[in-house]
Length: 235
Image 1 (spheres, rainbow, N blue to C red):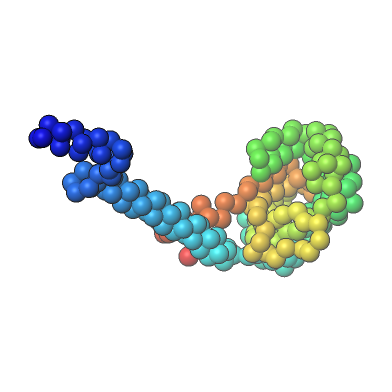
Image 2 (tube, helix red, strand yellow):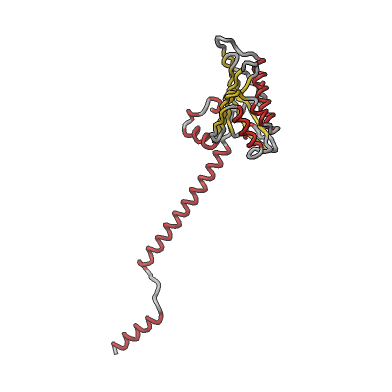
């Protein structure tokens, strides 16, 4: 009788199928689920914090030194050399060269644009492309005016005008291209340096131009990390 009872019990168990683990056997599975949820939650919080931090940095990274829209409104720094010192008329002439440069860009006039540079001028774009000479600059902009920058205009906000003797000037500015609404000075994304010289015919032309893309979030982060790295005008 005992044998028959055992056999019957085993057969009944087989028909019912496997039973779910209970007690200590179920704990590892529940633990793994908890760990996964914690990790996923932590990752989500990290992503949200990073995104929020980026947008906060971007929103608070506007420059304090916005410059002036009119180049002639800048009070120039005049350094005398053995050959003399620049005058107010020289500043007018330098600013006129930069104005002709802007006008030529707006007309998509590559030849007129190139004429504002010396024959051997150096021109470095914000992506690091380096052009050498007036013809190289004009040819490249002829293609650009028909391509990447077609239909754009230039916006500038001048930061400084410095003369080193009567025949050399360095102009710094913020700048950008635009198609419709002119951007505000705070929204200009590039910082530029022009070195101009007075040539033998009396005209001021650009001997070197360097254009740098402003990385506003990286700049803001560096100032927060080490405030001593900020320029005096941005403190």
